[in-house]
Image (cartoon, rainbow, N blue to C red; front, side, top):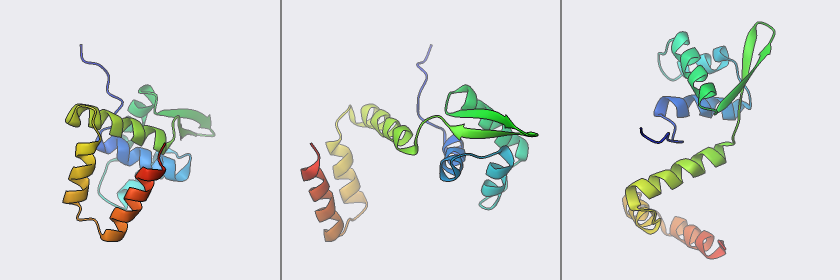
Length: 124
């Protein structure tokens, strides 16, 4: 059996971004936010939020006639886990090839490169 991945699917991440931005949200809140960007069914959002709850990414609490969902982990924690998993899977755990790829592929300006170098020097 395959090990459960902490990485979110693109649709799960899209939903989590809305919840993180608001700190808490109902299915309707998320549905309306996503509807501004693209067509999506309310039931799809509801199903995905229930999946995220089952996976432990969201926690829900009944408030009136709705459930209010809150993230169980911060955006920084989830993104950090996803980046580490990506680096392990794609680059064998080494961040250097990722940084080289990003520097070359994103055509960073001299100012961006200087800022990145400064951040690297300041990291313990």
